[in-house]
Length: 265
Image (tube, rainbow, N blue to C red):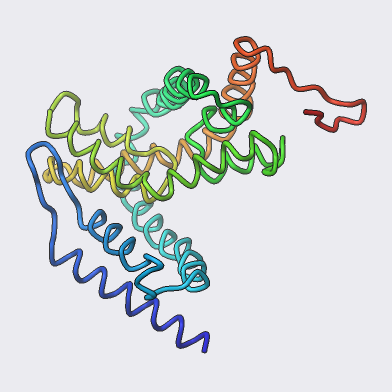
């Protein structure tokens, strides 16, 4: 029965891909809509409980296939780095400095909004980083995922998983169409540490600059790699401590620990 269930998932995925690719890339003014977006929408419709096409067990099983698909994507992207390695090394500081962009974006813009919405310590987990897998692990290790900070980071992780690719694709497409930034800068901005979001952003940028496709993919892949590696240490030693201090300064909500290091709310 499990093999039949897996076969059903594969057939549905194939049908969704065929339909999305048949629709192709569509441009509506400044907005670039990729097949990925149509696949997300169709997949969302198929998973509606009222349609009884997929149940919760099958959707959980489908989610386990994602890391396998991402491995193929990352391997392909990695192969694009080699031929452009010298160019990427010359842009080293630009790639490193984008970590500060991730930090200031989530802290300077995200934390005030979270506090205005009356979020408590959940704001720390939600706003200290872009909240991908490594960032969830940091919060889980330091506070536990059943803590307020854990609920904040998991909430943002789920939002990023569900809406992240759609948002990045639309945003990157609009900004690329405006022609305000160099396509290489946009490519580095798309590499935020999430393979699916990066792929969505790169697709929109390439649609606007098809002649730069290989370099755009290489810059995005390098930025994604830098974010995945350096971002962990930056989040652990810079972003999280600073976010905690700022939160506690403005709210007076200071977490206490007992002599054994256990956290007391």
